[in-house]
Length: 289
Image (cartoon, rainbow, N blue to C red; front, side, top):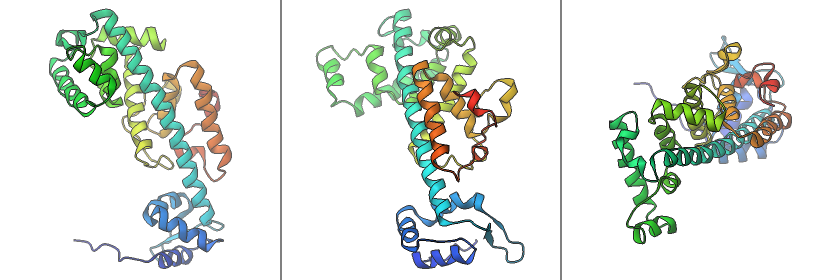
């Protein structure tokens, strides 16, 4: 069993970075960032600033690389995550509204309780079990109490969607009949292919989770599942750009400009960040604008 690396105090961590060629113009600032962010977390943002030195076996920073570059890339990723999270939140709210409206119109306010209105009865039963747990967790909220105490525990679908997570509403959509999924894709997203909508929603859930948990988008080699993209840019579906494209396509028209502008501002305000490190094609401004 391999031994873990020995513990290093903050000052020693700084010495290690300096010894590998990293410029540290403000030592106090660098120590503050090491204390507050964690050396290992910060080191991920230095991956594009260094390479393996074959002579020593250790990493060596490129000439001119600075701790300021690491801070800039970290702050870029933080800002980028915020843009992704906001867009995903809009997509989530929209999806809940679309599914609730369409399904209640087709099958009635509590038609979601009937497994015959869904593709897979087992997945539907699993959904109802998860819904029961979600309602119990939110039992003290006024709208849940109202339906429980005053309306005999009857929850119309437009109420139910308010206690569902993004992942749960995504799975509920994917378990609708194929014709219902296709109808929602056409009516609310103006997309004739339900397969694209299903994939983009799944990608949006994953993107939101990455953003919500503070994981890294910058220099991320691959995302999974790959986003379904038009043939001419399909190669970018396994990159963070694929998720940006999926979110963009799911947003209503009035939100698209805001999202695209936020992404552009991220790069404009952080010159160390390269679009290519997130799998952005050279013409990305034309694809999301």
